[in-house]
Length: 136
Image (cartoon, rainbow, N blue to C red; front, side):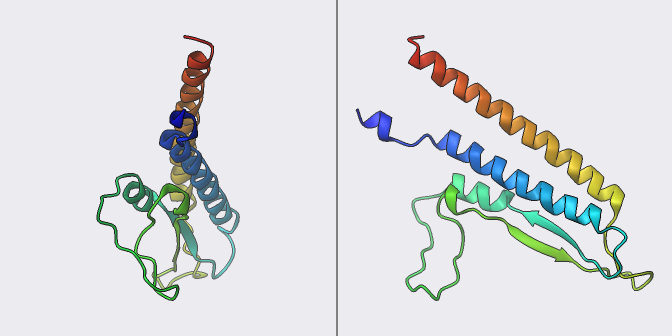
């Protein structure tokens, strides 16, 4: 039964999405918590492009041939970690804090909605598997 040993890419992708969304929630929460901290630079976690390239990988993937090489892109879903980017204050006024609470609240809401959508998809996938295991 080779099917049983074959990993389900949908489940592994949704698990990775949930992990990354939870990590993103922490980054956004940290930004909001430090909104009044002088000199704090807002951060963002970017992972959508890495995840997209890992999911839609071609047969011709760039590879590193030496451990010292910089990895070009994630070759599978489990390697996607996201990129934490710092956004310093460029206005030159105030306390050099680059956090906009309004923008962070929008990001927080969007991230929460996307997290809940991934949970719903994972629950649906699990219910299909349960239905199949029970004989349809």
